[in-house]
Image (cartoon, rainbow, N blue to C red; front, side):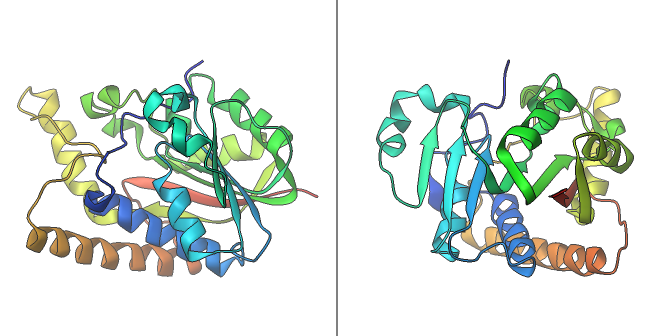
Length: 251
């Protein structure tokens, strides 16, 4: 079964896509506001790719330990990182044991049997009272060749995810849309594709824009994610290109 691969990774960490940087800043704030960055907290980052997100978590919360799990780690280029130890570790094998926090960020769409996978993950790797932080690409109607190229099986509505999470045995504490400003553009691209005029889209591992444009995009996404945080804090369900939830496993 394919969990997730490294198709969206990049060998140039200093050129991370602004979307990826904005996504980290957003979820770092979510983790901090829930006090999930305290010393001694254990994280399992599922489908962690090249580990960039996990390293950022460890760098900004030095007391936590993160285990990155991705079946792509049989790649020779990641062998040194797998044996490096420290706050961030890597494994290609299903981990044993329970964790305080499980990160499932833009992974579930890669899994053929998402309900069975999520239910087993919660039961096997999330301690009672622990938190699951999840994000998925939103809205079925936006599924396109971009999703196919990234090996997505589906996109989700908020209702889809809420039912899926409930069936897995977790309760949503906070949720909402993310990347609202990108939603109209993706909708136009999906519509254009249906009339055969869409162009190839870049994925999160591809970014080569000039520094000035990069800073502009980063600033726009900062405003976008700041709105997402404010909206979710007020319980507003504002549509976005992604949907996310912070959940707790019942004790």
